[in-house]
Length: 86
Image: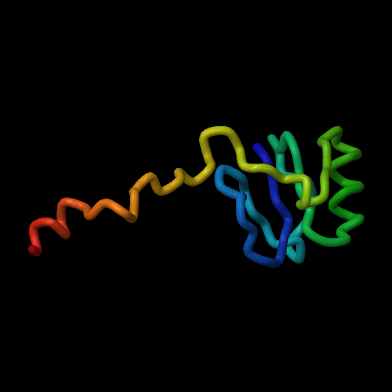
């Protein structure tokens, strides 16, 4: 499980556990990777000591299969609901 420590809303966090770093009391059991948004040396040290990789949130990418689907609607073509209104 991937953990994100941040005090702000983060895009691309789907499929990850987002936690407020102010409430950190120790590493979350089962964590496989941790992303931090800010300078939280205590969190970084604790997870690294537990053998869990830690990275800055700027390195976080969408998880496979968790990215939001793109809108495939062609705005040039009216949809069926609009046709029924005519």
